[in-house]
Length: 111
Length: 116
Image 1 (cartoon, rainbow over the protein chains, first blue to last red):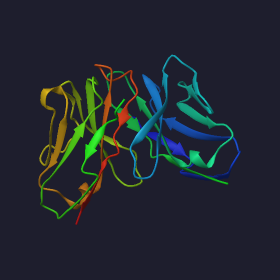
Image 2 (spheres, each protein chain N blue to C red):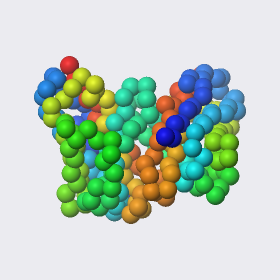
Image 3 (cartoon, chains in turn cyan, orange):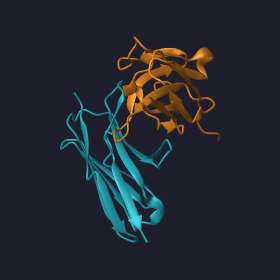
Image 4 (spheres, helix red, strand yellow):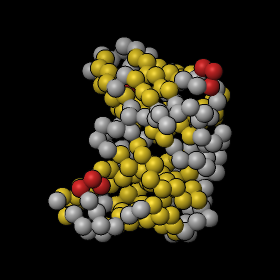
């Protein structure tokens, strides 16, 4: 059974810092991995999708890496801003199977 | 592009009552999902539709939950009768791909259900 863990559960940093959010999964036979952002009272916004054959994806100040063999992904946020404050969730999918979500990392970036 | 629309935004009911949620996905999206998100947890898939057929409902408590997607567009999720543990946010999502496995998911803002 696939389990997804995100560490840390919560993180508070000053504006401008570069930071790394971690995601680990127990079954390395994944099809793809997605990172999402969730603002309070809102749905999820897809940030990055990495196929199993890829090592990383970049979008603006965000970079997500994938190491399937070790069951890990990281989300790197450069030059953090208060507007980045949200909960970040990762989710993994096996071929022809459902997305399995982690419990998220709650990020607060203070001015 | 209009996003995924859900209603109502909030619902408070007593246990043993029934409730229904509505979702309108992004136009042209073949795959529609209903997720349950309990406070402090990640979303859990309840049911996945491809067009108007069910692809996965393995985690749907079928004794009390039901869902349909008429004409492959809008969808409704119903709970009857509700239990206290059904208190959660119910999220609807859609994706463009007909298989749903290789496209990003687009989520609505959810319906927050409180069962008292």
